Length: 332
Image (tube, rainbow, N blue to C red; front, side):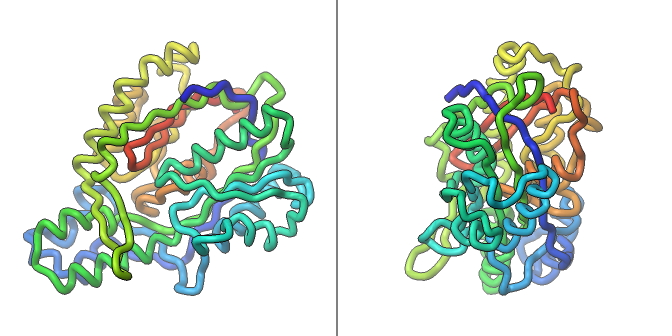
């Protein structure tokens, strides 16, 4: 899918929990040497030193609300001026109604219609494209795209299962679950004045690779796998096959890119993403070292921590299991 964009980012907000959990402590807790893996495997090989975990009572909507309040303030938009709220997290408050409904209530955004979009780690980019389409149609002027991820629950479940096992295959399938972290992210999206904003949203999916990374519930238990080496290899190849067309269509070249914002699962894959885009690693800011894989919150957190500058050009490479990717350019 290729969508001509009509919108810009008017405000960015994030929410980062206070509790720090180190990778070495997680590996020590599961007794990683029973699987033939040293305690510093995640910190040394993957590059994730620590991540943040929420308190048990924290809902995804709580993190999204905090991030959204900051984004609204930055955009100079009141809650009652929001026409639509799109929540894009993997984790949600409940199966129904939409988690966006609670965010609407917490903000007091009584005019806003609400919906949830879920597409693994790529969800936030899907949310931005959906917001853009509503703005282009004239149905909305201000759209709030937000997420809140409490992925500590996935990590906690993996730790419990691994502590009871000596199965090295289980460790391989679960290693990705030990790398995620919690965060909220939000953006206020408005119509572009013409000299700034997103260029085109380009989305692709290769559904035959869906089982490389999945989580489902069976008989009250979480079942799944995150085959990180295989996923990273396939995603890198997927982006590499498309990046030439993206540069050509956008009229950009690698030297034009001020910063590369991309999904982050660890050191090696991040270096590969920068290389395939032909962008120096110092222009591809990282968040994985201190926050881990932030799933759908990666793009807003990375952009908030490494602020875009007015008039400069940026490249965004989104990724999610499925396998699904997005490539888009932006003038801020």
